[in-house]
Amino acid sequence: MRDALNQAMREEMARDPSVFILGEEVGAYQGAYKVTQGLLAQFGEWRVRDTPIAEEAIAGVAVGAAFIGLRPIAEMMTFNFSLLALDMIINHAAKYRYMSGGQVRCPMVMRGPSGAAAQVAAQHSQAFESIYAYVPGLVVAMPSTPKDAKGMLKSAIRDDNPVIFMENEVLYNLKGEVPEEEYHIPLGLAEVKRPGRDVTIVAWSRPCVTALAAATKLAEEGIDVEVVDPRTLRPLDEDLIFESVRKTGRCVVVEEGWRIAGFGAEISDRVQRECFDALDAPVIRVTSEDVPMPYAKTLEKAYLPQPEKIIDAVHRVMYR
Image (tube, rainbow, N blue to C red; front, side):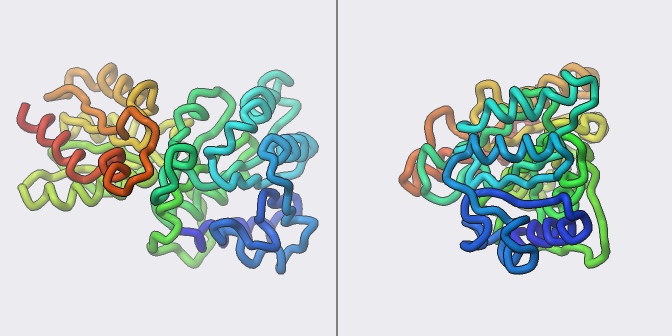
């Protein structure tokens, strides 16, 4: 996935001279996770800008650059630190197009790792997509495969709105087929990752991979699971989700965030309002535990959604 993201940025920078990258260690160090590897050598320091460790400044420069017609890609070394930039993102990037009646646009991408890695504890393991999906004016994208990562990032760079592009750190080493030809995946378009007839699982980013693992185990029991990946949370392709749920009659929503006010609650609400007559059981959510992330490996595993938790949830909607 890291190579797919790198290809997307490389191709868009070669195509459009207004695209540039800025962030901590994106240049000389070639990215904290090597996603920007080789870009400094190809495009030079004017378009691959190392910055101080100052997230609010990174976001502020990106917003200002976008306002004057450039297309910045601002890397957050981790979205845990994007909290320091919320004023720039929410009060400026998200609002100026609306407040100016469309005269001022903010074509910027803020991208970087989100969610839990491996034993990086409470301050570096948080899933904040619900915060950004809450805000009108922002686009929130979360790929779960290398193909999606490249196609969606290319679309995000070309979008005239600010896009929050959240990549799960554990998925950077994930391998998958990526087309050699030019392609884009439109933002706001969900995909069925696994067709099925008995129950719909809606999951994005790393939990989508976990859901697919659970679906494989459930198939051994004769339960045919359909896995739907929204890919973009805002705007949300609710039509595909509704179509799947109306077909299967059951729905489980899986997310890495906390239960209270998690984005899965929004999906659950929409499904139960729009697909009520088709549901054979209430929608069940699988989330992380409602505590800060522990450091111990065993507790980290217990904290996160695991295939076993998803299987239990599917059993509950199937056999209640």
